[in-house]
Length: 121
Image (tube, rainbow, N blue to C red):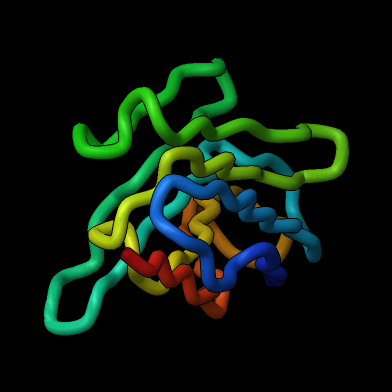
């Protein structure tokens, strides 16, 4: 199937920056969308940013202008540059890939294990 390995989370002070990475590997035929979601304690998982194969991006309103998503199509890696971080950005961040694989019919979603981002005030 698809394996997603995330890195880059951690503890940062408000106003600081972090860069998340997610590398996809496995029996991938084509990746349609790569993105990031987050889930804070007691809240539902929410979309943070997505980037499709055509280069179109979609951002959560509260991160627009602060976060930037990018991808390396050769390495099947997606990045999330997070600047001017705020305490309300504290959450577990999950990588998501929507892909067609050689071993499973159709377009399917795959998730990373999550990486903790904590922003102190």
